[in-house]
Amino acid sequence: MARDYLEQLFGLSGQVAVVVGGTGVLGGALCEGIAQAGAKVVVAGNSRQRGEERMRHIESLGGQAVFLPADVGRRDSLEILLADTIAALGRVDMLVNCAGVNSASAYLDVADEDWQRVIDVNLRGTHWGCQIFGAHMAAAGGGSILNIGSVTAALPLSRVFAYSASKAAVVNLSQNVARELAPSGVRVNVLCPGFFPAEQNRAILDETRTASIMAQTPMARFGQPEELVGPALLLLSRTAGSFMTGAACYVDGGFTAMRF
Image 1 (cartoon, rainbow, N blue to C red):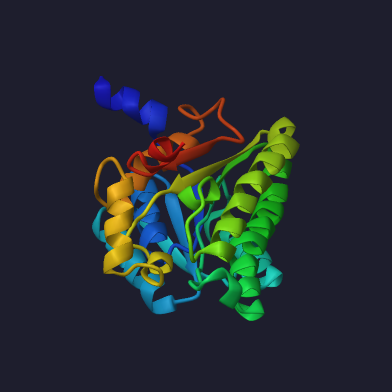
Image 2 (tube, rainbow, N blue to C red):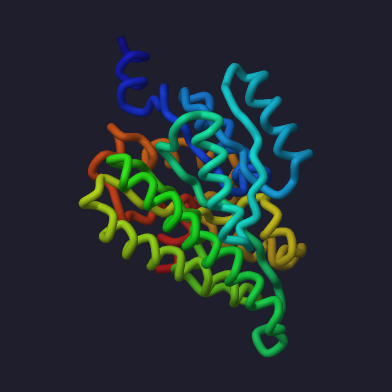
């Protein structure tokens, strides 16, 4: 009985999820969790090797997955991703925008090209995903979009200026798109991780910085990628998250609460 109830509340059986950036550490963990909740998952990214490895691992766990290439730096790539997903799996119920990059430097040393690259991938890529997939979902009668923000969207942290600005913009964009698409049955929410061992964090972490972050985090540790899965399932679920849109969910070990 309990299993049936949880399946009804959080299960994703019969649905199709596209995870853009699914070839990365955090995106890969979300791919695995969504697949184990019953959805067919499109692992989308620009590394075929990592994507196919993730796909095979999901299959070894009993899930269903395919790899499709995606470059968030090109609008037409995301349009092709949508078309290829429909051709392969017949539908799209969920989109996770998880592609992200970072650049670490003192503010006065931030290069224009680094600033633009971070904004292009983190913000413009998320905008394109919301617009392209959101239009399809609205026409189909509904769906769920989950964008990936960051704890730095709400709190200042040195040496991640473009990244923080881009993620604050992702939160704001998500709230506005949520309002726009709500009448069409499309929910848009944001998952804001704290500090996790992901590619975009490695550029800013040294021994001193790691100790500082640990001291400011009540749980005194970094998050593990699989700890994002539960909140993601809540926000993606048609049942558990049915009245949630425009929400920003912080998964940060208490970092935000301690700083406010």
